[in-house]
Image 1 (cartoon, one colour):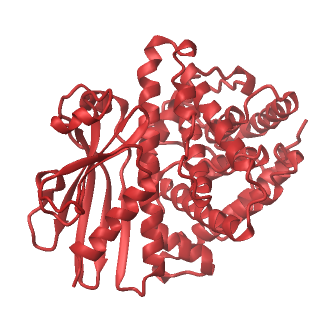
Image 2: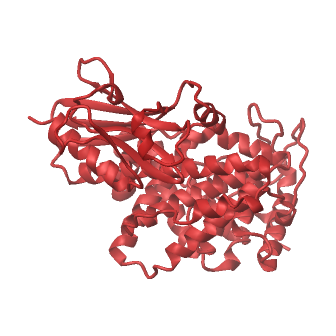
Amino acid sequence: MVDVKNRICVGGFPQFDEVNVKMDFPKPSDVVINDVSRELLKEVDSLSSEVNSRRPIPEEILKKIKEELTGRNVHNSSGIEGNTFTLRETKEVLKTGSVIDVGRKREATETINLGNAIEYVQGIAENHNTWADADIFLKVHEKLMNDLLEDSGCFRHQGVMISGAKYQPPSADKIDSLMVEFFGSLRTALESQKVHPVVIATWVHWSIARIHPFKDGNGRMARLWQDLILFGNHLTAAIIPQQSREAYYQALISADDGKFDPLVQMIANAINDSFNVYLNAFRESDEIQDWAKNILGESRVRSEQKLQLEYLSWSRKMRTLRDTFQRCANQVTSQSDGSIEIQVNGFDIIEQATWELLRSGSPAGKTWFFWLNFRKDHRHVNYCFFFGRHLSSHLDETLSEIHPSPCLLISEESDGETAIRLDDSIDHPVTLRELLVINNQLIRKRFDREKGEVGEAIYDEGIDPLVVATDMIKEVLLYRLAE
């Protein structure tokens, strides 16, 4: 059994008046998940096999993937805790290892420390003995909180409260026994090899957040130790977007009550988003291949979950599209001489209830998905991608099995001009008008510039997201913002 008593750096345990500090501590094998979670775990396994089948990855590609994922990981994990650095600022600090603004020294230190902790965790992941080692656990915390917390690398010796939480963290005098139990349960789960590694990682994430063993840094430690388990199982980082903070907190609260599915699904989706970075780097056109077919196997899915599975498939396509726009924007900006900058600012994808509302043909509000912002010298033009209802027309006769469906529409805002919707314009130089998914295929509606007939629209079925992104960015730069 792991002895952690001597890890308390300051002797004695102050008494803490516990209010609703019930500590039910399930083991990983006690975690029960539903069919939707199991389908997402199958997707994780499928994407893992696809990525790992291409190893060894060329060094130059692997370096780019690592830099991208580490930047995203640090940016979002720190952002959840209140760090205000943009993704670009985060990457710059990680690259240079220096403070970019004296007034933001603490945020820069947080960024550098988390980057160092991630690198350390990646380096020890193959040694499974480190996963349940209290000394290693505290060493990672010391790296994470270096120059930020006086008691870095030490369990807390005082009570803490979490505002608004249903269950409060246990008092400091219980940290010893709870961490012994935590490491013991983790070791047993690892030795049995009967629990899916994503479930173990989810349980680890929740347990550390629930025990709250440190004065500060608990959320980042929970996500680091989660990723340690994932890395060691040949998976990849589960990067929870800071924009999903509220949903993330609700998932943790649900796990407090023994319902782990929201957190399992959030982590599984985050893993798949990270695997998408690998697949994009390999320039694969079919990022998810037979995933939708597998998860939509109705014989294995209860009837009440069928619609949810369809939504998951649709949202995966849309996330892939946004990720591709981000990748292309980064490439143009990084290779520009500074006269051109393209930024992608994203929102959470619409929830299933809103998706169903649009699918039924009803309107819905607050459906923004992402902004694509262009700057060329002193000119600016911004495009808002938002979800709306597909309006049928005679053109739909060329598509099979089309039905009322949510679609992605685009509006334009430029310097001093009134915002317009591209689907309302018949002669706009940007030809993209609408994007939708039918039978798990991305379909683009656009005007055909080559035919030269104003107002003539066509559908491109099974379009690659990379083609959608590169065509639109090219048209904006060459035609909309032309000199």
